[in-house]
Length: 324
Image (cartoon, rainbow, N blue to C red; front, side, top):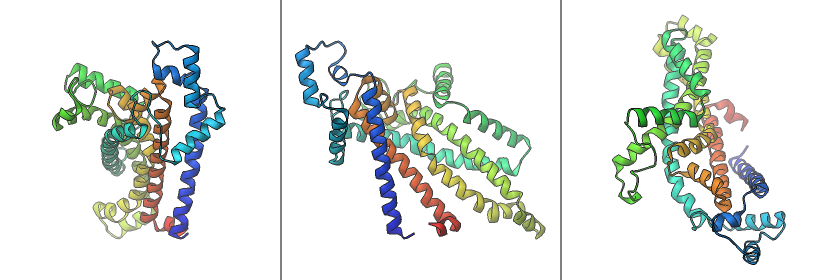
């Protein structure tokens, strides 16, 4: 398939995905018991019936759900995500501010989980059945079955409460303006959320790499390489890394969806001011425009990860490239 045709196909897939996600998210929010008007004015503010009716008319809530969705979708197509009812600023500004913090967190977690996970998987496969392999397998199976929020709470209790090595949460010292927080303080608050998000990712990559590398080392062409006198190091360089790297890289890019979901939980546990914790605040505070805006951005983020995974897989594996 030509590059232009492939690009058009992916853009159509993205448009279809966003249409489906936006319709589903809007339907769920509309069916929820959250009253956007009451969430906007505050629970402690009483409105007269006339004021309430005027607000409904002003926001278009007196129209049918289909009309409301089409009006909202039309604004989205024009680049207007609406105004956040919690922060009283455009949704795009809130997302732009918070996405950078989440991107840094997810980027560090993504890179560390990929490198450490692959290394542990290779070590476990080359020493299969030994003590190191059992330790890596135990770690991988345990962490893969551990919810991110629970692991974050454990790290919080152990490293913040018991040992006092790290702060309890936030992205800087409490009461200090963001622009006055130094780099060292930011890193100090950054470590535990990043460690929490990385731990589960390391386990997934390690398990997958261990199985793939084991299959490679037990293959016929590796047995033939041993018969020719290749050393274990040569076998790893010539056959092991080459045949196990592509699946690991593909899995790592496809991990974007789980990474974003884990970021929501980790940021909530540590009160880290990223996009994930903002999504939770928007849901609990009834901030419908911000909630829907973050849902759309997360859909684009996950789609981008899957697309990059396909591209990288095709670049590393000629068999996949020939089919595309």
